[in-house]
Length: 494
Image (tube, rainbow, N blue to C red):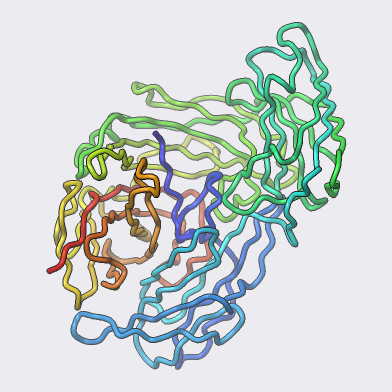
């Protein structure tokens, strides 16, 4: 089980991969927050399709609350006003209160930004093209592909619509018999059988998108065809693909340290185990904001004894400005039996996102949270009970194994039993961001007595280098994240 946790204030989530969570990423500076008598939050929207466009984020339907220090260790809530189309603000002459606010996520949750600034700037990133429409019921792709060599049994094929973010992996029913020098593929593929590549709504293909047909051997892209732009109809749309080979002409060289990672994970509480490693390189339209969502170029799984990744890959999409982004992940897991019978996977991770240039050294400098605490109570044993003072905020902090960090993210999840009683479900409630030290205060009313929760605590080194100045827009590559889940705990009355 490899559960990547993109930073959700980075939706916050980061980040990346094809989770499709709205994310907080890099962007140009805005002019919000110019009134010295007000505290403010200004948001922009990055639409990540075949290219990236940016516009003010409409905040008119979003809610925000500034949490003003009441002088007694608690908060006084100050409602934010819609002072501009892309801005929430409040009249306050002094102080840098945190703000709790919403964004138009597919699955709603709140963000809590507690950086030491009066004016904060961020980005809501959405995987979409402009004026997206739902797929039409009779749409289908009439595929006719010619391969550069005979179809072999170790090959697989995929159609991706980048911008609509829809994809289909060809099945045996779509393909000729393998290993018989067949170079022609002919298939009628209902568009309703395409799957979403992100969490955003399914969309019909338009001429804004880039539709590609891809050939893979294992996890390596070996052939590609880019279809001319078209607007999808409510019927068959032909793609005549003359597939060309993709030369593996780009080196990937990275030093990894699995024994060091395992040693660091051994200090995490609750204890995790069974180190796994993986890496992936994708062609990323959203590379400038740190998102690796895009066509797979190559992926692999290092052996436990490997200390270096050395390979070659190809990227045929550079003319589209889809740069190659590499993500390497080291992870250890644990399983908690929620309610005694329902398995809930928790984990600790070290991961990095970088452009694969030169020789990379994955020394993972960000401090790994080895013990996460709520009001100084270590959350180190799953199933524990925690008393929370109903009159005070809940201070969440982490003991980390290294001091290095640019910014910290702390997500609060509630754990519940599914409606049919057959599974444990996790629900993201709030994702917080802070700087300076690994510590943030959550309003007490976010927690309900007798409910179950855990924290996902993340430290980032690199990435948002100006976060302490209120800039959660500008992202710098590479960035590295160390993260761990706390124990699952039940809130009890004090």
